[in-house]
Image 1 (tube, one colour):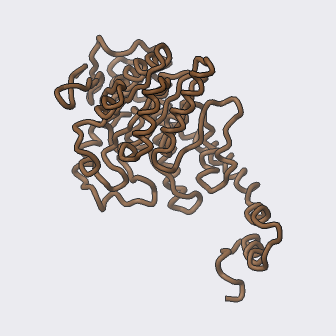
Image 2 (spheres, one colour; image 1 turned 180 degrees about the vertical axis):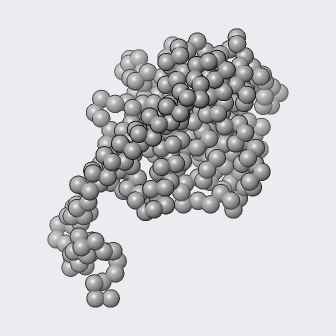
Image 3 (cartoon, helix red, strand yellow; image 1 turned 45 degrees about the vertical axis):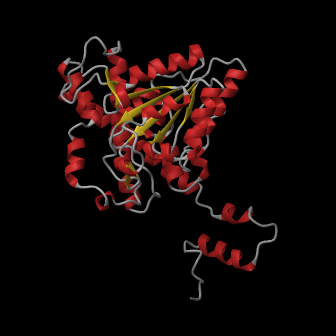
Length: 366
């Protein structure tokens, strides 16, 4: 279960600490307080329940499409909890749990989901970037931010997240190469959730592991059980130390699984079977972590139910706050007022129709 070797000629370290039943390798489990452990589980649970609520809101037409995190909570929490607030967090588009750990406002997420730019505003002093929808662009940004921090002599590192599909993008290779050549203190977190939308990992690369891609660039690469929050945390701690102390980048491949759709516009039933999903559901990162806490008498069923209720109340409050803000932002004028200096008659018509609550595309006399 602990450290092992994988990849070509056993060149890549693999780490697993916490198994599906809640048992751990006692020599490798990180020294975390009870409060830290419970905060971690709450963050993972909040991420999942928030996604479940967002799915209902999306299906009812209250918000737009989004990318669920369900199944990848441990990979995100274990990594993001290893950096400091002054370090840089550069996400892709699925990092809900990592964002929650960094203090993101759930109401802002919902406002952005509803299509308003105001939902993605970042506090001036926060070292967080907004979600990156284009696949792979955030890795280049992370390398550049880390390079800039090093050149300025700042004690800051960058951590960026991406999926297995992004490793097929040129941005990935450019970022890795640049980070290595110029000693950029950046940690690359690859969440290998087995699918690039509908394309399975086997159709993306012949590499035995994704972590081994680091070797070509002179970067340390490690593979971890991505559903094991302890393994991800320990590997991230090591990578963060290497970045901060030696200004060297690292790549961590978190082997995990996306239990839901790629986005809410996707139907995963068209490209994967139920048996595969159920097999991975048995490795659920939240249940695994909960089993660990239960066996150590840190959280009984009553305590977990209280956590569920508190999480539900938090999400209720976020949606109430978001609804009010969305109503205030409902005026459609800004969509039209800053496009052209002299508004054409057609845009005037669309503006009037939207202000009346209709679709802009259908003439009122149609």
